[in-house]
Length: 279
Length: 245
Image (tube, rainbow over all chains, first blue to last red; front, side, top):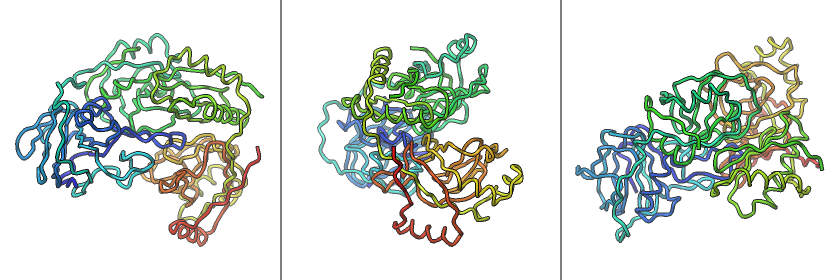
């Protein structure tokens, strides 16, 4: 078991998502920064769908009860293993009784902790991803315990990666959304030649942007939305839907983020800057 | 077979949107569901896909494929023209009990006043009608129901509630529906239905699917409480009947 001594601000178990139920209103969920998690799972030679901890803004303090191997990635925190500093993208050997402790957030917004063979929480509707309407708990709580597989001998092919992170990137590549043609020249200029800042309303469901562009009076019937869909409200607000975003919506879907762009946004916090580039 | 003029629009690199004429109509929904079944059974067999129907649209998501829009669009148009009327999924009419007791009908009196009706008349109209499930979204198991009588159309509440309880039955604009779980919400609440629409423990977690129909019937507080116990111990079976295509 992994003992959660302190859970941090918003820590969840996530895998690559819950699929096949979008027509029943179930969001995909899954890790926000897929690019990072793919790397740290690869270091552990895990399956792509192995579940990890997603750690937001303030990290947890964790005690490992069995031997295992872990890798960290994503946002940069000051992290210690038994009071010794450890780095992202390195394979860490864990002994029973070890304590991993997250300190100050230095860069980015979401850190990830992958473990050999993934966390063994129960799968619900094909996924271990926390989502409050589906899983018993929406977040990892203080004093809770998370099951994992004991792993004492692992001879990795590679022991570390160069930290090539997305944390400094601000350009989001986007494709056209279904209502892209609604945009006039002025709105196109406002979207593609200006920078936007992340609003304080940002979470796993959606990221709102502060800057308002010229609005519209287009009304449409409710229709599907996806992670990475940018909704355009009549008042001219832009909302980027994220992994826990609702599966349908009634606002025009003007642009659609690429998978990599979703990962970039996942590492942004209130006040950070982004810009859009059309593919 | 009936053919509509459909439009296919890009939706990022893993999805496209197919749109039918911009109307809420049973015939359109039927055509969408027919095409959806055809894509599922005959066309997309080598893909990992998801199909999301809602009102006048069908979103096709190919999870592991980077879509070449122009060629996929032409492929879809071709499939639409050549589609055959394959066996569609069985549709059901669900009769769902609603308790309009004052404990649950927080806004019933206000709604009645605004619509110049008595609360009894509101309940009679709400239960007399048969609604069509045009989409499921917003929350797991939240049904977008079409077919509300014009006399029951009422705007959303001026200020949404921070907490609407699970099972709350509401009215808003041209819509009526059930909150499948506790959530914030701005609909006018007129009753409660304690049939679990979405239950992760069931093999098919969502009771209804797009294309099914819903009719509400009024139950007393005592019957509501009885249903509640039956739901808790897992013996409650909602009434359903097959709809012949």
